[in-house]
Image (cartoon, rainbow, N blue to C red; front, side):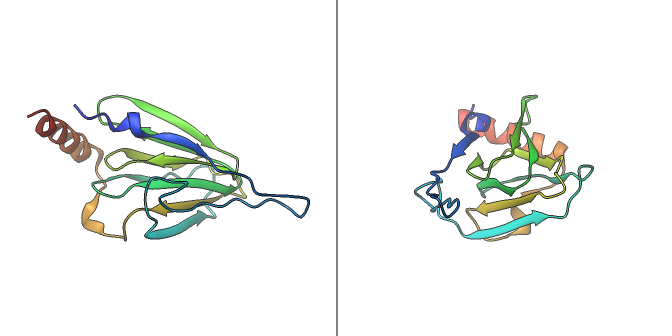
Length: 145
């Protein structure tokens, strides 16, 4: 059985700053495990808002709170979950395809940068958790054969 949670990981980016200020560089296929095809950011969400609430069949993501903080809950559909706190602009979390993600507890100044491996395609999003559990179970069953 493929365990996608084993691939979720925190990434620390090199701080290239000096007396003039901080500089963090993130290069696709070097600092993160994919070429970047899409970039977007989330801001203006308060602590009560939950974003994400989906899994992706193909897309991989890296999430970086470039300002403020937020939390990311990652679930694998088999009852395992991990919560990450993003609160330093030189760290991010790598989320492989086929993990459920929920972003929440945004600080008032939070700016969550998202780097994606694929262009947006609504058809590859799984937005219902029960459907995700069924799909991840059948995906795991197929990989065992």
